[in-house]
Image (tube, rainbow, N blue to C red; front, side, top):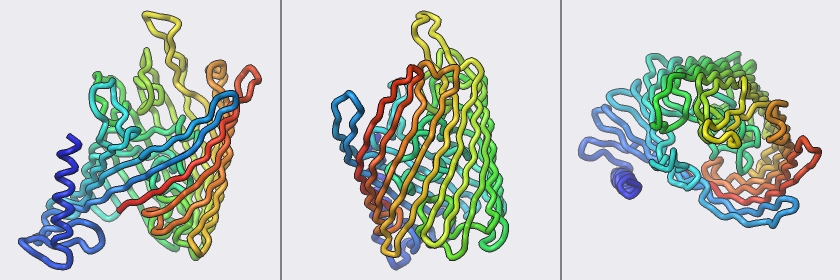
Length: 394
């Protein structure tokens, strides 16, 4: 399957390069992206990729440290329109090992996004298919547009990830005055590429984004670091809520299977402030569930638990005119009392230095971080991480 997909994309890329700067056989080159548009404007395809390679060292107190080296992300992307620009599509495929986490060890989990868009007006977007839910902002931001080598510990516990269903977005943009965006989704609730069982529950998600001082330059709320060096202060405030009814997995759209279905409620608040190279980001996340511990009907010693609790993230960074960046991050994570006996609280501190060669499309990042797990017994166990990462893409 992967060989066929690569062959198709290589042929599309070759066709696009062959036509560069001219119009032939009914096609013309898209000057702004790698791709082409039919001369009769009935379809357009743009081709992109990104590779994220990482090396690092991890050491937990009382254990032997180990080195890591991996292609963290290897993704291929297609987007464009069919018939006219009101009917768009986006496809994103992941080929790295951690992108292809299998479902029940039966099918390769290659598809990340496969979604159809309809734009009836410049403000409205209606989408159907599989894509990211409108949850916490750092999860909505691409992993290739982060100012650290990875997302926070709270994102790993609370995010609601991708899902299949219907998505609606109404956005009112204004670079100098109050702007806002309203988003909603009605989805299956079990995450991407779920084919195992029928499900009698659905997930409902809603989000409000406010821009009191006007929209960010080039949609700057969708990438970390003030690479545009905003000329005036830009500020985003957002809140999102999701209820996943009869969820079958530990984190709703993610995680191991539960022994019994549970309804999970998630709450997110985000803020982002950018000005003249400075970026300040804050986030609050929480997950709630009645009776979060599920027990195996065949062996009461086996359990699967919904992670309930809350967390706070803060980040501060500055991009120098030379496009070097320094960044600091602090995260707090608290487990609810009903699961604290088996789940520790955690703090994490991180410092990062990055060099943006071509914005987030080509960059080199380094990070040193320390995570402190706090158990109910009073024991604290610390883990050090040192990472270096290179990102390149179109």
